[in-house]
Length: 109
Image 1 (tube, one colour):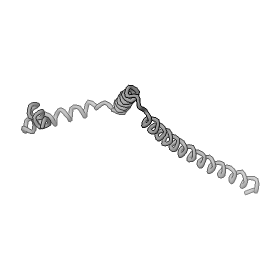
Image 2 (cartoon, helix red, strand yellow):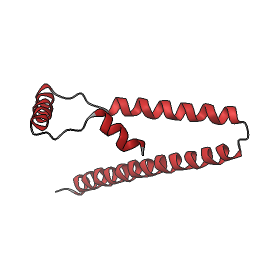
Image 3 (tube, helix red, strand yellow):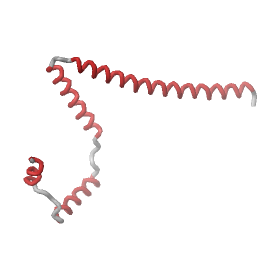
Image 4 (cartoon, one colour):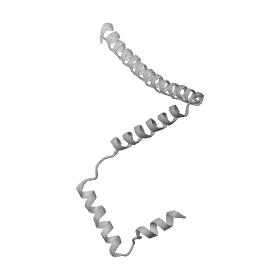
């Protein structure tokens, strides 16, 4: 193998290693940036004295969390639904059920 070829291969490997390190650095700085932003937000939130602003932020947070949760949900397959129905019917047949009034009474305490 020629010296020029060895240098090219070595250069490509070095460039690849540098690229990987650069990507890792960016990933870690993005995480740090998010952490920094969260801390900054919390600090700013703690300085708030206007209850309307706090209520608005609570509503936004609650709404966005619910939206994120809904987006992460996946619909049940027909096969899974049928299995759940079969299990519920079996539970009912074997008297492994609780009435709505019993359930309410249990959690009312």
